[in-house]
Length: 69
Image (cartoon, rainbow, N blue to C red):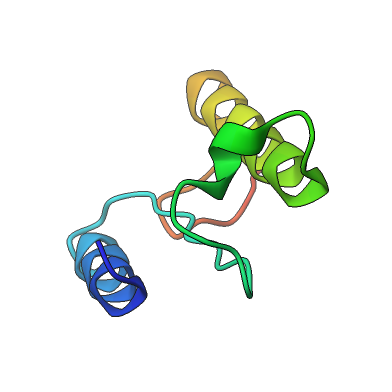
């Protein structure tokens, strides 16, 4: 998907009550995450994925994307 499509889908999902975290890494190419662990931005992206999944499974993130304590 192109960036504009990604942003539109993320917004529609949020409006539907889906927990969404959409991050844009400037000047990165499609599937840059596959260069893990050589590319530092890829490492950060996978770190976000890891945190997001843990937050969802531990119930620490509310539907509006804000963390609960």
